[in-house]
Amino acid sequence: QKEVEQDPGPLSVPEGAIVSLNCTYSNSAFQYFMWYRQYSRKGPELLMYTYSSGNKEDGRFTAQVDKSSKYISLFIRDSQPSDSATYLCAMSAGYTGNQFYFGTGTSLTVIP
Amino acid sequence: DSGVTQTPKHLITATGQRVTLRCSPRSGDLSVYWYQQSLDQGLQFLIHYYNGEERAKGNILERFSAQQFPDLHSELNLSSLELGDSALYFCASSVGGTVRPTGDQYFGPGTRLLVL
Image 1 (cartoon, each protein chain N blue to C red):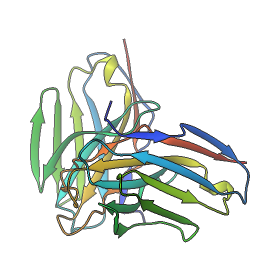
Image 2 (image 1 turned 120 degrees about the vertical axis):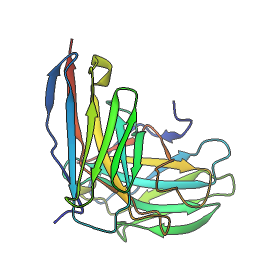
Image 3 (image 1 turned 90 degrees about the vertical axis):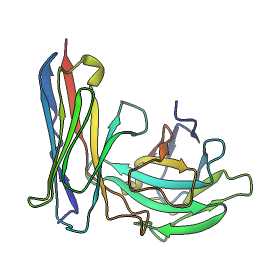
Image 4 (image 1 turned 45 degrees about the vertical axis):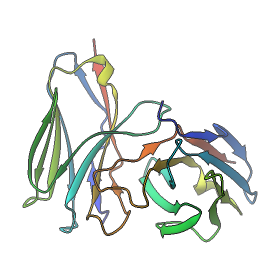
């Protein structure tokens, strides 16, 4: 079983829709949860992160962590064509090492 | 643009061959991380160097090796290449010796390796 599972999609939505991206994980030691955005032919870039359980909002993006269910989500409100990219979740147990565990990514297309 | 550069952008080679991928970190960054990205495995951490010294190893095969030079650029050497080594190889850099778990590492554009 992989440490992190992510539905690869692809996901296609109309402009303005609310998008929900999700990951599940198996390692209860994970404390830090990140979302990266990767445009085609580019490297991943950090979108936002959360620590432990709870929600975090940044503009149109909201990250949600439910540690009891080992489930994390990224919501994109009022989606724009410029949001079309692959979204990767990533997790880490903490400051003790540099091991980041990434999901395989979900490909999102926002149709104008 | 993240400030991390990688060369070459594309590489096509044959099984059994050896290749070298190069990475230059952002100005001022002392750490370089190497990742492999494939469709089925996703992004996997390979190895981390800090100021010339190896700091951590992930899922790196024995056929692969890396080093970081005094000018802080890094090279990833892949030898005895197999078809399954075809993937995107990214390097990332950060200022300190430990990437904060909040993920403050900056990725380069990647090298796409195709082994035929």
